[in-house]
Amino acid sequence: MVIDPSVPPDDAQLLRESRRVLLKMRAGWVPEPRPRVSSRRVRTAMSVGTVVLLGLMLGLGALRIGVNLLLLVVLGIPLVIVLFARNDLTDDEEAGYEREVYEQLRWYEGRYVLTSDLDESAARLLERAQRAIDTVTGSRVNTDGLLDDVRNAVMLPAQEWEIARLLAKLSSLRTKHRETVSQGLTPEVAAVAEPLARALDNSEEAVLARVEALERYAANVTEAERAYVAHHQIEELRGRMHQYEELVAETGADGFAVPELERLAADADRLEQALRRSVSSAREAFRALDP
Image (cartoon, rainbow, N blue to C red; front, side):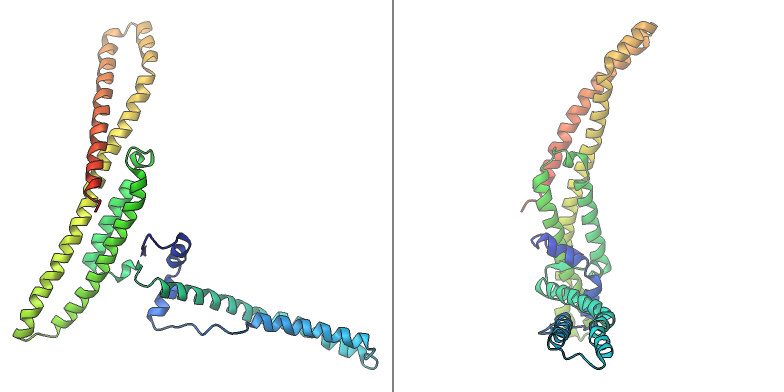
């Protein structure tokens, strides 16, 4: 499920956990109206009433003949209520939870998309977009703040939602269009249906352009990530360079080691420059996503 990022986090989490109820809703299920008085309150009132009644009878001295039998009956009523009401209590809680989920799903209708609702072509596009977003958000250059991680955290979920929303509308219209066309068209209707089909294709191409922009951004981030990792590795080696120098001096291996050390320093400089270029390119690609 892809959810509008403006939905509050707690509600969004409830929506993500509500697939079972959502499928029931789509099959026509509607929860029963909320009872004016819950069965839990009824049971509580009965239990309290029973205890109060017993207290009154004891106070008035009404328990004489058959006191043991009457006491057993009166005290046993609350116990019977509790034992046989457990299943009802569980059912009440489950019904209450499903009613809450139902109300949330109705309230946020149009602000979430089930990926299973997309047709095959749309599902592939959404998967590509999500893969690109995961590449960016999971990169070290993003988590370490080399990119605009704050804007990434806001814009990338918004991009995912917008793509999912458009693909859901496209899938729905495309499915209905195919159903109509499959019934056979007269020449007059075909003349109208053809430009409508082109409109669907053009819409898909527009969404594809959004996805490709995300993928270009992810590709730049991947390149920056490679340079960033390599840069850290080179810096670790440079930090130990004096140890290498001491070792080769003591072993008399200077003729072999000095060129390697010089190459290491040169590689470090090139990687630093490559990292800066990669991060700059990634930021430029990110600007293309910003409306």
